[in-house]
Amino acid sequence: MPARKKLARPVRIEIKRNDTVKVIAGRDKGKTGRVLSVDESRGRILVEHVGIVKRHTRPNPAKQIKGGIAERESPIAVSNVMVMCPECGPVRIAHHVDTLPGGKQRRTRVCRKCGQTLDRK
Image (spheres, rainbow, N blue to C red):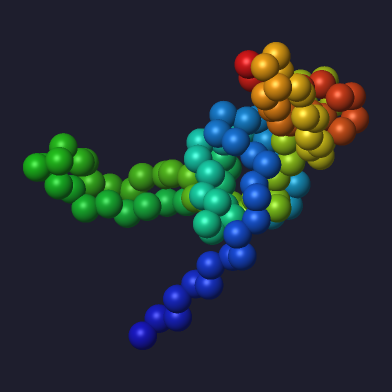
């Protein structure tokens, strides 16, 4: 019986879908790409054109799937990437709490180097 992978302890992930990130460790170190999905329970993210693996698929005419060897991304650990600031490059993230009219508060992600907002409005 194969051993089951242990789930990583859940940590708040500061990276969101469609962020641009740079890989800082692992096989694809130095590559940049857009985040396709975030799996908070496993602590992994899917980055465009990073962690490419070959997947052997069997043809299934009912679902219009052509068989063969397909290349696709595999998830990488969130600790192996850094968010890209449009001005500074790879940076750590800080949070600013903005008070909106009506007493509401909103947390925004900002660059630790230049203070530019990383969230899209």
